[in-house]
Image (cartoon, rainbow, N blue to C red; front, side, top):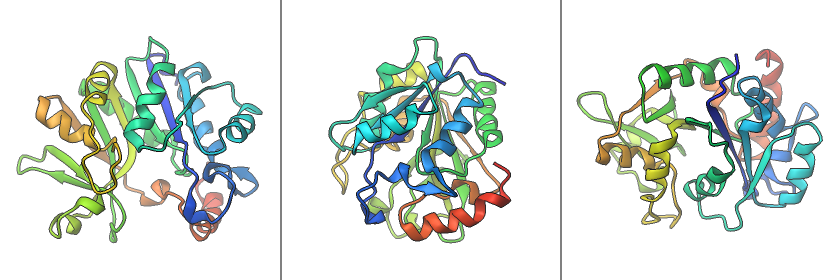
Length: 250
């Protein structure tokens, strides 16, 4: 099913220094296919290619050239790596004006299923939310942003591990890095994201706290399968995913 009023941004600008390679992270291959291709195949099963923008940065021309062999999508260049909030800000102008809701995907999460994405989008649209986050419970949440919820079960913020308190680090519900955001709210929120954190970067995750402060309607859904949200940061993790893909019916 094609969502004509949905735009998709795929974050693919990083080098991936922990991969210990000059090859851009998203061009590392899994079973002979670039990681970014799995994400793009998921995206084009949901919207037209004209509704997709890929944010590129490190070795941008190489990434653009590789993607363009198979997909006719738009590209936005993140010239300085100032965080995910900056990446979304750079990509936003390249989305079609008809995109009422914006889905944000990660180029290094290749096992994501279109069925899961559609559940996120459908939930977001049904509840007329300003922001919906895809989350997952992990036995070991180390390295992930924690989903902080108040006593009413409402989203308060996403706390990156570097900024999390010892109590917050015990939270097992974590951020997948995948969101659906209403266009009008996104325009407002991008102007309010600041870099006052341990990394001095513009975290897109701050949009949850902004939604809480502004009284915007936010929510989350939790996937039952942590496997499909596995990201890739090292060659070892890449090999693990290579073994999982044949079992995932992608």
